[in-house]
Amino acid sequence: MSAWCVLLAAGRGQRSGLEENKVFFRWRGRSVLSRCIDALASAEAYDGIVLVLSEADLPRYRKMVALDGAHPLVKRVVTGGATRRESSCNGLRAVPEGTELVSVHDAARPFVTPEIVRATLADAAKFGSGVISTPVTDTIKQVDPETGWVNTPERSELRAVQTPQSFNYRMLTAAYARAVEEDFPATDDAMVFEHAYGSVHLSEAPGADENVKLTLPRDFAALRGPAARVGSGYDAHRLKEGRRLVLCGVDVPHDRGLDGHSDADVAVHALMDAILGALGEGDIGGHFPDSDERYRGISSMLLLGRVMEIVRARGLRVDNVDVTIVAQRPKLAPYIQRMRENLAAALGVDFDCASVKATTTERMGFEGEEIGISAQAVALLQREE
Image (cartoon, rainbow, N blue to C red):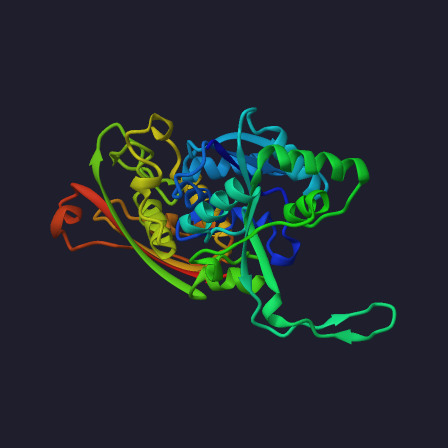
């Protein structure tokens, strides 16, 4: 049976404590949204995904695609509405005619398993609806807002409902048409379906206990891992006539410059690798390959700015860095102050947190023979509280 998924990502997630939509939070090199799409795709059950975003988040989505890549299963991107009901309606309208089953899923649940997806779709095909749920483990108290009286429902009769929630497509669209006509308020699609048809079928599947929704600051703190991260970087470039010598964004007068695809700023390259290492994000070759003509002759300070975007997206900040440049010539002491100022500004740290040093090798090795220049860097990152 043909099946599509409407993936809701238009909320603001204000309870998360993040400055941006929580689905763009990055951990271990990918965003929550990308991981959620990957998880849904792994079920191999959908013909396509309709992604629902707020209009304000469309530029952020494009940046995410540039970092994570575009997933082929995301066939359509539409804007959401002021409420979940409106966002679901917008997503359902974008589902192709002839679709038999449709799932609605929250993008803030990136831990969904293939078993969960398949179970809800199988139940939707059989019963008209399939809503993943788990038994309630806490004792629940129901309070009457007028009298204050408390009732304790039987825990064995309660279930906590999650997403995905899967349905017969025609039945769900008809239910939403009625909900809109009657202005029925609903917090999820199961409520809309119940309002129209009386009940939904609750599904069970392995992994439901781990299918949590990322909501509160503590949820994202758990993803971030250690509060402090340390990375080291190393780079080396050959000296070549006819090239500028650029170190930490400073043009240093010399008879030769460093050879490379970009401006070959060896010090900044080492620093970027140190920062990326602290993030567990690989190296600059993976992010800015020398096979890409966009980076030919580009300023490494500009690339450092892009690395800092990744740092901030991960909820981290640079605490301090230490860069050592190894060169026999030229003498770099007159330029160290400007190098540190450049790095401090790019990293958003105080001057004394951006250390740059220069040394020689007493004419040993390729640096001492003036064949090339190398640099080493260490970076300390801290979680942004």
